[in-house]
Length: 377
Image (cartoon, rainbow, N blue to C red; front, side, top):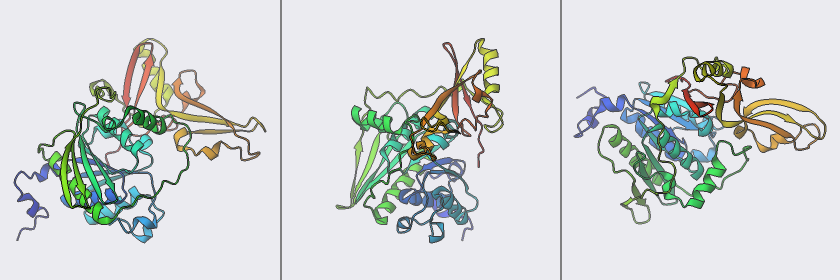
């Protein structure tokens, strides 16, 4: 009897365990579907798993998730899932990123991934992830579920359709407005619970993991293909998605023009970046953060001020209310940094730039792109 952990699966024709072991797979969403997919990937021996999720474990998750326990209630899903996966198979590397994917998942980190699996239940997040994958030039397998069914859709490159191609122009504009990096304060909402069961989750999670393996080992996957499952009839069919000729998302980033920074976001100041850019470009540059940074609150009623220094999209709308008199405060917001700005002395991390982020510096019609380094594990 073989003592190789992966002996049985390596008997499958066309299997390549070495390619699985060297792959980095990003799973966005660690809820029910994400749990099932992550469990499958770690058992298959996928080398490095990166998990992104902004939520905490709730009791209602426990009926549909293998990786969570009652002791995990209130803990970040990404962290709890990562710990459980490491217990299942310590040789697999797992990185947990807790937070909104708009602010914790940098393009450079995404570009370093082999494949992305979307396990999201939010249309805005799915649209945003799809656009990020196109810029990063990384294939995306998007999973979705409903009460008694689900689907897996392959959005592999800019030549084929993307998630937004499946939307109407009005739907696309509405999602971009509501889920943009500069959409104002975070609105506290309690989304309606979706009807689902672990049986459907297991099937869609299995299909998503199977397509992931096929992609990683180099087997052919049809771009824009949707694998659709109906739990009512217990049947599956494939559907072909089409690229929308007016969809504006199909222009990948030229990564040969992205300059890797040698210093980390918490040690490098914006002033240092701007000074180097000024020397190179020959004129005063502006650093574009790519998101709105809330610098300061001022109350028009009582005159009190409060320095903030946080990404606006991470701050609840209730924070705009003055804690002293209850009036709505004025917010000083910026998305840029110039050499003479007071906040130019802040580090990139203080300006909301995350490890793995890509940001731009502009001077006239000249543009330079920079990538912030990140830890692999």
